[in-house]
Image (cartoon, rainbow, N blue to C red; front, side):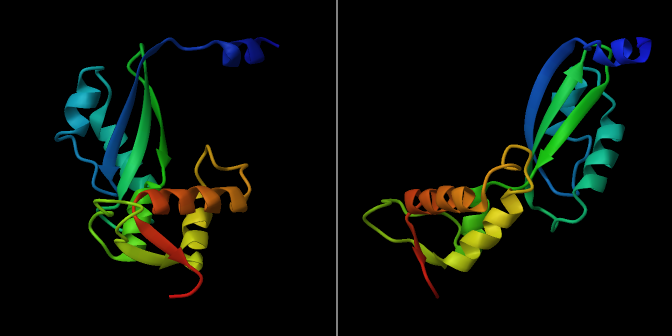
Length: 154
């Protein structure tokens, strides 16, 4: 019973830090260094752990990281997959979306691209229990908002 009580004790949180760091390229330099340094967190431990967790992604893939810093100078972090907009731009082969979405079509992607993006996003903590169809609908909405047309086959 005492073990359960010790596990239930919550550590006081100093801050929640959100960063976008390239996969496998976390270094103690900015933006990571100053963000973690002000809470006296172990920079090298974060960099090694982050790089190990993101080694399966291509280098320079922007990864969203949420770091919870505790008052005792320890931390926990979760890594999310890249944003839907990044995936859509890569699939369409463009640098940015349309300047006038709804009027000017910047590019087009197929339903297969949408499905593949949804399968990757389903591994995220927040989308874990969402049906694949719902994630696909959300991705299609994002593509339309970017001025990218979703077609059956390219």
